[in-house]
Figure 1 (spheres, rainbow, N blue to C red):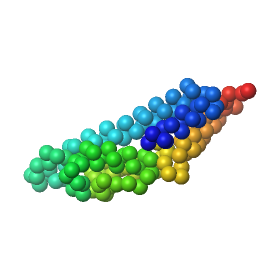
Figure 2 (figure 1 turned 90 degrees about the horizontal axis):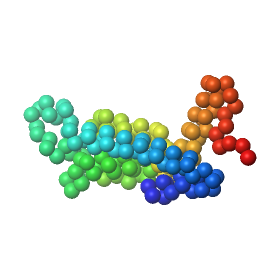
Figure 3 (figure 1 turned 180 degrees about the vertical axis):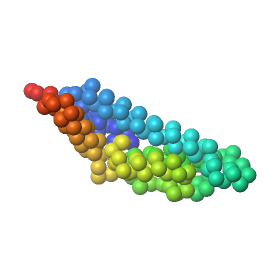
Figure 4 (figure 1 turned 60 degrees about the horizontal axis):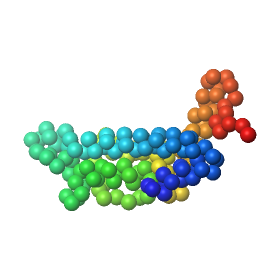
Amino acid sequence: MIISAALIFAFGFYLKKKKLAWIFFFVTLIIFLTFVTSSISLESAGNPEIAKLGIQQTMGSMEGKEVRFGSEASALWGVSTTSTSNGSVNSMHDSHTPLSGGIFLLDMMINSVWGGVGVGFINFFMFVVIAVFIAGLMIGRTPEFLGRK
């Protein structure tokens, strides 16, 4: 994740737009932290269907997870690995609670939170260019994203 975050700052350095790089960094960081906190809170609460059976889940939803990591670290790693698309796992993604697994799937579909193997920063930048283009169509002006020289 350090290399992926560093590419954002390299983008700002080469274009001489360091403020834009900081904005991109904080946007990706906010998305990542939102996914992490949501997934950890969902996994810590446990599975509501198992709770209906009267089974205590003091460690959270532990089905499909290693005891040495626990549900919180598994949720953190699940979001981290889908954000960077590196393919490593420490728990089975289909064993997470449904909403937490949905966060993983959303992260895989967006495929641009931190970038990853073979995709890098380009997916995030492509979404920004499309958003600027659509915003320009909506307001009726020619979009100027990086300014004129």
